[in-house]
Length: 419
Image 1 (spheres, one colour):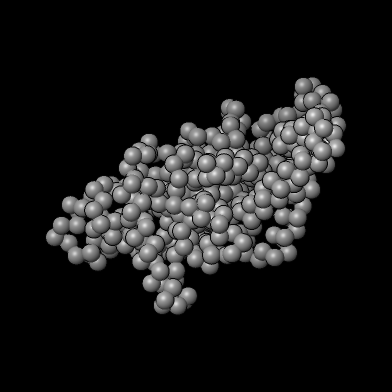
Image 2 (cartoon, rainbow, N blue to C red):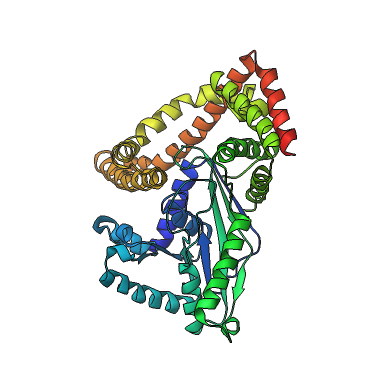
């Protein structure tokens, strides 16, 4: 019950922080078969939380023990099914505790559980996979030896446009399943099977993940995918959680195109992309405004009439968010953990704030105090108003710019180069 509520609450926070989440599945995942999700790791432990909001079935994620065992968060992490993995640097006695964790994993898999693992072993925001460790292959081999008749390994890619930026984008790509059974172990030593399986997992991970080797190409791709996402937003109405989007797969294909470009081809693309975004920055507008005009009478009237409610919504809901921003800015030095801590701390403080405001409202205003139950609704309204307002302002700046033709022409040139 608590898990289902936290799952819903986490999904609300993700939809609030990210403007759109695009999800693509190669195949439908069977809830009645045990599975291990092999995920890349660009955003702290946020991937684990996000993945639990996609599936109703709980996912047990393996994360570093020093995070899971933080006293103030230990209860919360146990509720959301985060399991500790101990490293050799933490001491031999602690490493022995992994045997208990692996035993718990095998017992869970026998009950058709979902397990999540970060095979890179470290969190780094980049458009490239780090070398994968063999831990996931060892766990899968141990599960097969423990009597699991069928086990699926599902590669997962999390591609954040900008992990810690408010109202940015997220693409999730769940790839083709790798099916394992005990018969595969016959006539093979475990270490040989682990090596072969690690190679197969690595291949599957590369099929779904952005994997650009050159740092300059990574930087250009980070800008280019904004153009690709905005093309999708311009063609049709997109839900905050777009469950059946082909966009993650398309973006992966474009990343491969950039990776395979020769120096001459990439040099031309780089020049156009940098020029395009430099103009956007100077004109204080954005890419979506170049292809989507949000200036119309309906939006203008909506912004004027809705402004008082927007201000009220901001004033009533901003207080719990400010401490989270301050805490993360002051104490979080690792970029990969900024987004998840901003959202989690904000949601934690907001839950307490909401309860206090509601109780005091009922005490002082009696039945009329129940109006404070609408606080989250006001927050959601203010968010949608903010999106409309920023889109309108950016469209206004674009239309008033004397470089709008140049922007559109350069954008079209970029599209031609990658088509």
